[in-house]
Image (cartoon, rainbow, N blue to C red; front, side):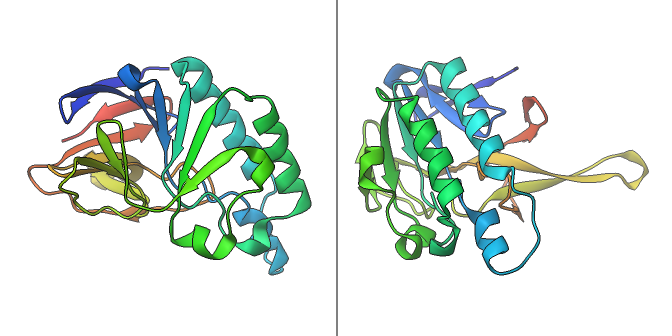
Length: 217
């Protein structure tokens, strides 16, 4: 897949169409807003939705880990969508995925949904921390707020931009956005939805278009 290399805070990073950011020098992969169990939570509320979302997201995460060779995985908040989404099939699928990656160090920076859904099971070996979390050269958060200690990587907003073409064509695509003080990652979860943002003239924006990441601003 055609990844896109760019620089943030003086560091070369890889923007991946799996909706992940890889920092080669630190061997770290960053993803935000997985919202595992959201489909199960909807079904628990008697709302008919597909059941394949978690399996598809785990496969995409596997692909990003394999292609990048990351040794560390940082989850920028909202690992689970809700406590009601922690169904037995969802937990079993994630536990099996974790068992396939025993050497991978995983850190969850808790987001607003995590406060209600709860931390993952202890035997998954995921370190859970509160934001802000200064780590390496970055400050990791769920909510995008500047931090004097370093450049912030965050999620929360599920950013997307609307692109306009000829013939009144309009398409909204998930995106990475990098401002002067913080960067936003697209929501990793495939069943999360997105929110259209309005970048400033100083922001850099990269959309995820199928199997490619493309710079649009």
